[in-house]
Image (tube, rainbow, N blue to C red; front, side, top):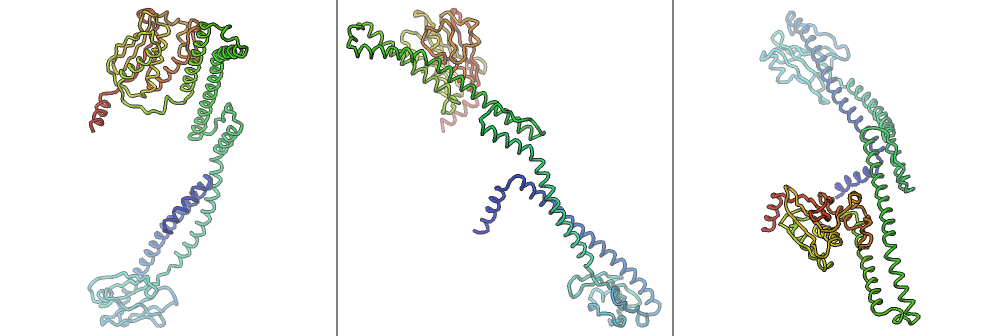
Length: 477
């Protein structure tokens, strides 16, 4: 359990460190690993070079001693005196006995392989022993019916001194690498520090107009540009919210004022006890109907404002649906809201990927808008068909149509043409239509119908055959 907890503690410790500390540790670790690898490679090369040099020297000394033994014989050849350190010599006689200089330290016993050289089985042999009891390089060379051996103590002092030097150099490099890594991290992260300070200043002051200066290059510049783009989007969102609030306050003022005046009139007459005499039954009914209409208008406006102020179309998820079902449901709802308006449907089955409630609201707004302008004896025509890879919905009326000057602003929030001021509505219906259509990857346009009225056309991407087939298979399963 403790073994698994230790890596987790190390990860938590690492994640709590600053980026500057991480870069410093990474730089120092990389340098330490590089020095260690260099030390290992250099040690192996030095050991190989020293061993090769020692073996070459042993072969040269053995050839000199073997030449003397060939001339004087192994038993009579004069062995060089032991100098106190360094080279060791020995003669192996044919009977297996050995001769060594006086005062020379004893060499390891003659090995079986060296004995075979003395007996003529092979010409020479290089042996090495790295243990504490046998730390020699021994070269055996066939000579005079026996063999001569020249040995040298295996000395690792040079490698040890080299290793100590490399260790000190490595520690110095690690310290220097840490300092350099810290300096590089400080220099490289300076733009990040300034960016952080600027972001904190924006968060503290709420000043979205303060763009962060563009500096640095590569990823730093991309990060700064992304944050500036985010600030610009926040500025646009705040401006849109301000305009929405101002427009909503302006649109709410008129119905609220009218509603308040009518209610105050009723209260004042009731307090005086002159309600029945001052307001005949017909006038009272008309006033109450006006109050009901004003309340309904406020309810509609509040619902449309709520729908429009949301950042998304709705919380519902997109699904494969038959747009014809949505159009029929929306037309039925419109007829119940406007019983005096006739809706003529000409729809075919077209499958799309979308949000049912949002699309139904958009179609309902289109039919409501057409119903306001359509004469009593002329129906609102709703047509749905497939055109290429698109589902095309057209809603037209026989009214006066939309003036060319009003077409560019017909989808703006709260915009109402001069001719529409006297009609009920908030000026939000077509704006909601455009937002729903845009969210579904479609397009809504305004034209003139063959009957002289307005023609609003919606193009939505139709669902592909592959998706329809996949949906059918899922339904079967």
